[in-house]
Image (tube, rainbow, N blue to C red):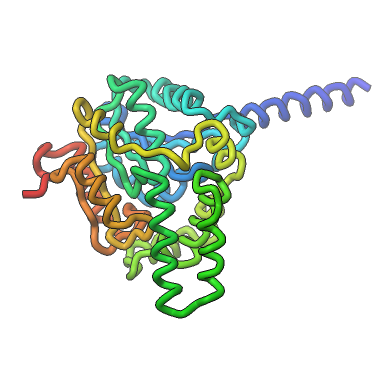
Amino acid sequence: MYRLKIFFIAFFIINISISAQEATLYSNGFGKKTDPAVIYFHGGPGYNSANFEFSTAEELSKKGLFVVVFDQRGCGRSKNYHSDGPYTFEAQIEDVLSVYKKYDLTKASLIGHSWGGTLATKFAEKHPEMVQKIIFVGAPMSYQMTLRGILQRCKDKFSFKHDSINLKRIAFVEKMDTSSINYSASCFMFAVANGFYNPSLKSQFAEDFKEKMEGTEAEKLFGQIEREPVQGVYDAEKYTTIHLFKTWMELKKTIPLYGLYGHDDGLFEDQQLDLIEVAVGFAHYHLIKGASHNVFIDTHSEFMDLVTKILINNPNAHEKK
């Protein structure tokens, strides 16, 4: 009986430990804490930071940066951290503050990839004193412009091919409530199906990285999107209607903003890219040939070079003449 009690006590303690571990906001730091800090905000909502962490974070730290990645609540390795919400910006900003606290950061630059650019923007609005610079990487400035652009490019493609079946599907989606999560999901599914996230030519780095990650635990995270954050952020913040032009124009008065966008990124039409260029400033905007949505993988060397110049080297070295 005594042994049985010990077994149940041990089992109880182990399970509490596992639950506590699973309920933690995942983060990881690379490099020296004395180096300039940069925090990576991943895309989604619902994705995770694995592709940036395993492709770029450590290598970037060797350039002289302290690089921090984290998986947002309910996402990836933070799947069980407040997976039932709330998914308000207020709650997620508190999560970012906890990352600052964990690594003893008082000020850091932010890299906002895709949806991560929106969350980084909201954090900077609330705590501008804690943000050195923001680099937007394939980050929508207007979700409605992005969604309309995806549908228009698909429509043009299907019309050219006389694809009546897919044109009917596009027509059906166009009749949806454009602010709804179903409309957004449908548009992004069209984007995936039509290769809008892929560069026209895959780089050697991308090929090598894919081969290196095959069969690893990290690979399982690369295409993993959690449903709860997608629905949760929509319910809390109606993120599909967010338009950030005025916000970015206001932010850049006190925080330098930069934009790194892929020339082959099918999520952006010229009109939105022009507005992004105005919002961050001509000298701080880079449209990178050979890159699509994941600039840091598609054109890895150029991404590393630009980020290093922006965050470490001569502050004017990255500016276009």
